[in-house]
Every structure is written in structure tokens, then in C-alpha cells.
Length: 211
Image (tube, rainbow, N blue to C red; front, side, top):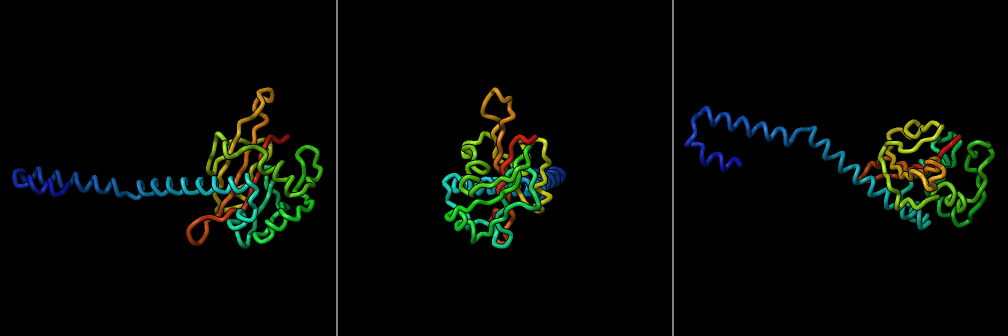
């Protein structure tokens, strides 16, 4: 573009040349402005995190806990929450223990049922069926980043419990018309940025309508 202008510059008055030069500088500043670069980086980050989350959803669906464990935070472990409000007494499984627990399949208390308050006592295999992959989230119609798409009466405290995190939410609006949308379901994967390139998985959260 500058070459084209310089070729015809001799045929222009100094006033016109100055105007064209000012215009070129303005265009360059706009195209390279921090705002435009920030938007580009944000889009790139969103695409990266959703792609990574989709990869982990497949591992969860196929129950490949040994491979999933490779992405679990090495010191913080993997938190499990049966509902959107994450308890301070939540189950946290260390990266090296995840595959072992899956194989041994002991009964664990994962929290308390909404409404009755009774303890959620079940094996990790049953927990995955009930509170992790309770729907085919690989075909979830809605996916959001750091935004709640479905929420019951319980307070969502994800970003308070996991500061500096980013979460991806897979959402179904409902399954049976007779429930008028009250049977919505979410699976939320919470990530923390690694010091090098990539992300750590730090929490798997189920959410659904609560009383």
C-alpha cells in the first residue's frame, strides 16, 4: 500500500501527500491497537479452552479416568460437587488416586442430597452415572464460558471457591416437556491456567434444579 502511494506521490500536492500519510498512520494504529489485539486473544483463548473441555468430555464419557488424571492439577487435585453450590467439605481426589479409586470402586460420601439432606453414599462408578455424565454432554445444545446457563435456588459459588479459574458449562434446557424446563441439567468443568502452556482440570460440577 505504501509503495502504491509513493509511486503517485510526485503527482500530488504537498497538502494531499500529508493527508494520505495521516490516513495511512491512522489505519495502521487502528489495525494494531491493543483493543483489537485483546479481542483476538480473547477469542483464541475461548476457542482453546472449549476445545480442551470437549476433549475431556470425551474422556469422561468413555470413563477413561487414567487419561483424565493426566490433566488433573498435581497439587490441588480434582474437586467433585453434586450441585452448583460447592461445599467446603467437597470430595477432592488427588491426581495419582483417581484411576485407583475408579478401579477399587469404594463407597464414598460425596455430599448431601438436595431436599432430604441425606448423605450421598455411592461408588465413584455410580456417582459418574448420577452426578457427572448423567446426560450425553457431547451433544449438549448450549455451551458457555464463565457464564451460568441454568441455576436453581442454590447459590453458585464457583468463582469464589476457585478464584482465577475459568469454567466451561454444558447445558440441557430440559428433557421432558411435562417438567416445563425444571429437569434442566449442567455439567461444569473448572480449569486453572498452567504456568506453561495449557490448563489444569480442578473441578467437575453437576448442577440441576434444587429445592
